[in-house]
Image (cartoon, rainbow, N blue to C red; front, side, top):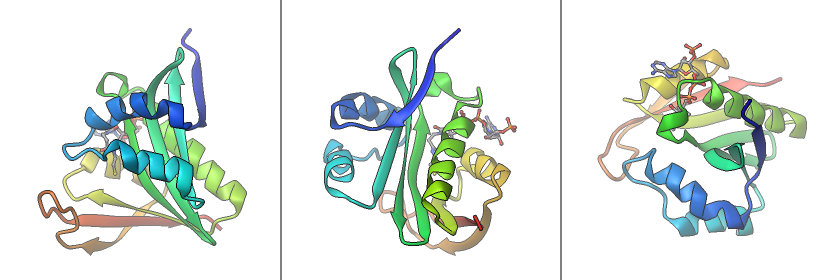
Length: 149
Ligand SMILES: CC(C)(COP(=O)(O)OP(=O)(O)OC[C@H]1O[C@@H](n2cnc3c(N)ncnc32)[C@H](O)[C@@H]1OP(=O)(O)O)[C@@H](O)C(=O)NCCC(=O)NCCS
């Protein structure tokens, strides 16, 4: 049986995380953003998911006082559709709840119905639209959120 681990992201993970990132987004974040997030941003909490010691996904959130914002979540294409995204989401939502945040929110591309469907399973609902939010193609972002308390 495969060994599944979710743990904090370390600087030494960034090369592997970049593979997840490049295979998941048409405008991937550059490596230095991950570096900033992991090393310099006290509000940022990043986690990786490993299957048999190989990083297959990652997720991050910013926690500022009562609010948690999920910055990103992604799995390598070959590992999608097996409830791993759901496990990872549940894990980071639990981290936020343990810290005591009251609200969880995120932005998601209007066209990304798969991710929206997963977020709805966790009670997130659309709260508004940020028009032309994504700088690469001006796609709108849907803001989704849930009260945790
Ligand atoms: C979004 C993502 C993390 C989901 O991870 P996943 O492991 O594939 O999803 P899971 O197998 O855990 O499924 C969780 C739920 O997502 C939805 N979902 C997953 N795959 C789906 C598909 N092909 N079609 C429709 N809904 C789907 C379903 O609601 C599913 O629950 P259900 O099976 O009970 O219906 C993954 O698809 C991914 O990495 N996508 C690319 C990056 C991305 O878009 N990230 C989100 C940025 S906001």
